[in-house]
Length: 113
Length: 114
Image (tube, rainbow over all chains, first blue to last red; front, top):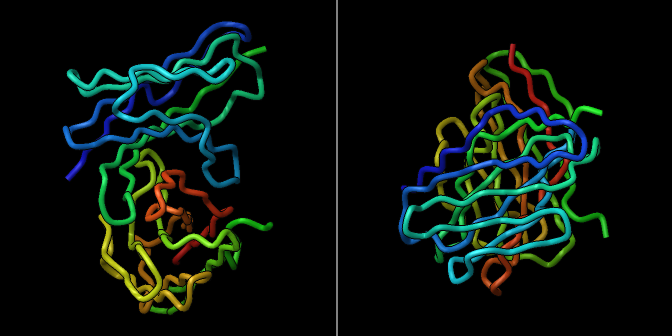
């Protein structure tokens, strides 16, 4: 089955700096890679996703890049703000029944004022 | 729309007790999922239901059973709770069969087994 590794497990940045979180996956058939943000006491919420036919996707201060050859993808957050502090999860899935997601272990991002 | 709702929000059980976690969605999604979240391990899939009337095992199904009661509701049952099942449980739904990729999560149930 799929295995997703995520680094780093914790990340502290100064407000206004950029943050980068990296994930690798093992299944070359995976074709959809979402990123979820989880605030304290809440369920995860999708913030951005990318499909395997695209190398990069941006949404305001958030971007995701995908390298299919190396089987890794990254989340980039620019101009970080205190409200970006949360746990971020990457995930991967392939086409098939119910599109089961395999999640990384999560990154606790802290934005210091 | 309420999205995905879960009950209860918190629960404490003694070893050997049973309980059912309830989940409902109002987005007309065909696919529903149960995950558990443990520190440092991300979310792991317990069971999923691709459509009404079907259920399948995920990564960590041992000790759990599920029922897809109808299109809206998907319940998770612990027949004989063990301390290893102390975790936060999340239900999710998606329109996976219709090309929808996003999974929408509920607020979670925090379960402690003593």
